[in-house]
Length: 121
Image (cartoon, rainbow, N blue to C red; front, side):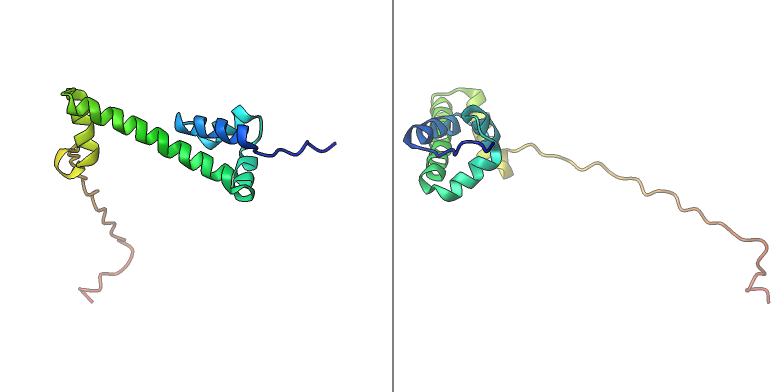
């Protein structure tokens, strides 16, 4: 028996948008909607409004969180300031990772005593 057809209507698009805004992955959105991840991808191709809902959800969620972080940084929250600077200006504020010095492995030279020495011939 075949599974019933699943179509992302306006209600499903709204739910998917809200979930994407909260940072859920495609796999998590699929679980919440009761479909497999492959269905989400195929329906995004088939229904542009479904794809757009997920894209807009991700963007709006990022906008909200970024705005909240920015506001905290502007208002003097030291943790927010540090986080913001480390991620927005990595060259000047990021963690400086020093590469460890790697030892060169010792070279092993094996002489074959059975072979005549060419230098003395």
